[in-house]
Length: 508
Figure 1 (cartoon, rainbow, N blue to C red):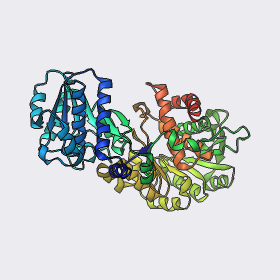
Figure 2 (cartoon, rainbow, N blue to C red; figure 1 turned 180 degrees about the vertical axis):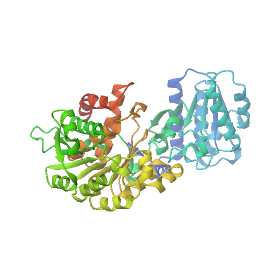
Figure 3 (tube, rainbow, N blue to C red; figure 1 turned 135 degrees about the horizontal axis):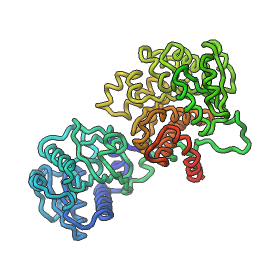
């Protein structure tokens, strides 16, 4: 599914108008969608519609009119004066035959609220186009509602397009003040703010409804950001070719560290499970016996003694893909091996220590990536991202995670997978995928090593880096969801066969 920025959403509305679909028609369909969503989830009760001064408020007037026609008790509270409304919003305000009360009046209704289920609140104040912090009555209202929610006394809140206070392009709560919705209904396509944290949490349940914008209009806009699911990468996912041999599915090498041996072993096992034809751990001589004794029989262990022997291994053309970082160590030796892998032109996943080791010299990494970055994936979490891209990390609080990831990928010249509850994968040309299926149980040691293994395996099988990174992130999250509470990193690997089985059924 394509994700449209706020500006692109306006373009889509304009394109629909040029295709003969009037704005008032789209507004009617949007209001009807919100009404259907309310009726599907709640029994009949009073509804308070909070209407803003723009088109979002126009949607609110449609909601009020249609609910009243269905015999629901409705009151409308307007921010501003009805006479100042323009365009389609003014048209639908005129169609509303009930009273229009000032927004200030709803505060009195909420201050002494005895319980939270007496009515439903419809937030049709601003939508996704808000670009400045809430102020005045709206700020007071949102703060009051959030206090009531903490007390268990808030009414259900249905947000039209976007909860008030959430930036549509970044998902950030402007000055940390935004309304918490129970249901958010948006139209045509989601916006980044629906999927990026904290916007995703503030939206709660998200319902994306088709209101009649032609697919051709969206295709002409050509959005670069998509929801991370099988639609994004399914066609590139490796087939189980009956004629393939193990080398056709790639020989993946994981660099083993001398101390934290478990990290490389997790990555290697994950890569085997995810379909790499052969997996080796390149183990330093002084740790060779540990790896040889500890890994499963199907994982090879390749001993090396220093950088020269490691480079000799890279000359083997059958070894197509490297994972460097899990437990590798923060030392010059790790740095030198990363640069050697990139110079050799191997597909690679650079994770953990392979990123942090360049904290003081990120330009050296980016220079090396320029020559071979198209098949390389960087997988930083927040701390590692800040080490490699300190200036971008400082801007994240203003421009959001999606944009900083896109800028990082452009600077690095390769795919960047920025981990988190809202993992973003971006390419140097601006394409991006946002992952929304990751559960909080993934916040445990070793899960990042498993993710690196999944990505490496897909790269080894010839999947393009952008698609491989997105597919791995999606599978990683699905495995966690399948296991449930009590998850440890090893469980992700055990769950993968069942998740893959379901995926292949979906792709058939």
